[in-house]
Image 1 (cartoon, rainbow, N blue to C red):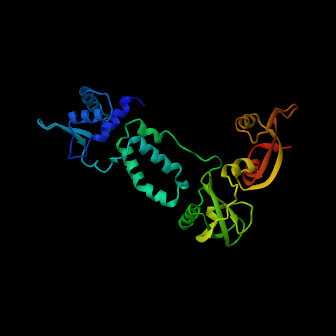
Image 2: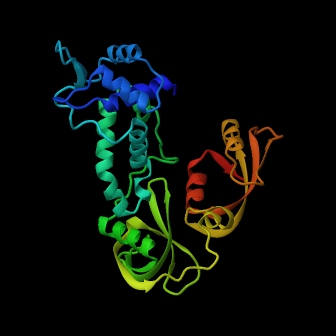
Image 3: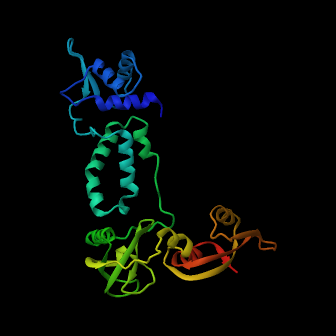
Length: 310
């Protein structure tokens, strides 16, 4: 953004709410004190050229002319919140809120209201429109987001923060009712909109992925988590096993692909050793070979994609 853009944003933040007002001379002095190189005539031009959608008006009193936000807009602009901060808070709330501890998400709520009010008020400015130009969509079939019980999520967040165990009532897939288990929480991972707790269960050493929406109850215990000495979340997700409810087995895939799917998988390979070559027979298409870690998601993809397993 150019200097003139940020100068105008700073100028808007300096303008008070009606019935208070500020003169051009005061605005000019404030901008200069904030480090902007600007003359009074430029400030006057900036004020006169404000987009019509911004509710800032001049009180044309002969001896006390001044600028202010129109009546009714006093609660729509966060006085200590810049437009850049408002955009950041709005995007964090939209796409990262599920990763925030419950207490932090609650503390963010007032700032979010300020941010949204600021963006509504300054909607004609380009930076305020950024939130309308970006989006994140799930990679996969359009499934509904499973419901996670609020007390469960709060207990999970608290246990992770405090490094304490959880007493969980967990209903595994295919089981008719939940069973109690002591869980040592290590990390929280979201695959799309579905949250999983990476944890040890009871005194076993292997790591489990427990779906938050399958937790019927969760209570923070006094017992401290028994964490592996060398636990590293990124290595666990990328190097050791794939996240996606893995089977732990490595599969050697041999597939015949249509041309469009071969191009797609060339851009987004299934594995590091993937090889795709043109088929040299009458059936056409391409042949793929790759070594992958078996998972439920992979099985789902194989069953729903137009290909042939050799």
